[in-house]
Length: 334
Image 1 (cartoon, one colour):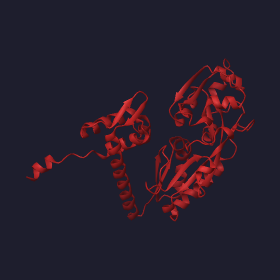
Image 2 (image 1 turned 90 degrees about the vertical axis):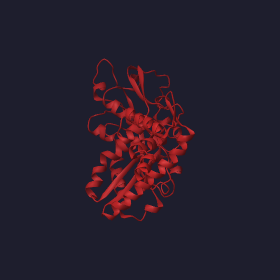
Image 3 (image 1 turned 90 degrees about the horizontal axis):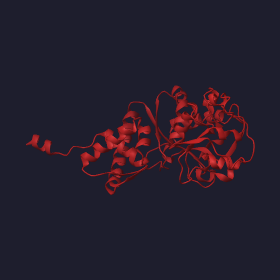
Image 4 (image 1 turned 120 degrees about the vertical axis):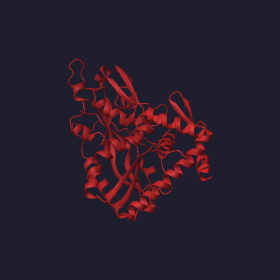
């Protein structure tokens, strides 16, 4: 009898399938979910198909260059997110009993990959008993409801909140591989020379990131009619900088996100023309986490790293009009 009951019991989806679905449903992208989970896009797609087969219903509507949740997907997402949040909280409590402390941080893919992660080993060396969990997400999350200690956001000052800790501002300027500058067939000494080169840009049809748009940048610096040799379009800024380092074209660099690549000689600033953004990077601490020593230590470490990052970018000097008037009013992002 017990064996028959066991066989009749419905099989629950594996934790890996739930994680893949939760990420894809939150980001509405198999590609970005794969980047977050360190999987390929096809691996995430296979996970979703397996989950749909186990449940017997479609969870996503797959359109050209777009992904949407079905009604069943919306309902299942709420439950999956709650299950994973409960598991994370239980894991954190058990780790606390073992003497290790957990610190959860949310930010965007670009800020995590280009600024935070390259520096994170420094914090770990200073605080070896603290485990840092990073969640890359474009959503503005409720820190208390989702059990997150710190959010690192890029937004106008008015949207940061009175309790936010300002880390640094941002300047935008062209960057490229040294190989492009060294090519005598295609000069790159002034803005007009961009007509000889491929421009690397983000896919932003709704205009949510005008400060990273080549058209806006060229208009502000007085070259609105410039036509490049071509364009390569990417879904996220964290993809643009590796493409620039590989020599595929000229990107709009964001200081201080590209500072290390410039200092290492992977990128150069072909001509000195920077535009300031009215936005800045901020650290927001959950009210429930403010009294924890590891949270205070992480914020202090962020401020120290930010002070170093805000120094001048090698090979670049601010010149020309400010871009502040072009960057106001959009939603926080990085």
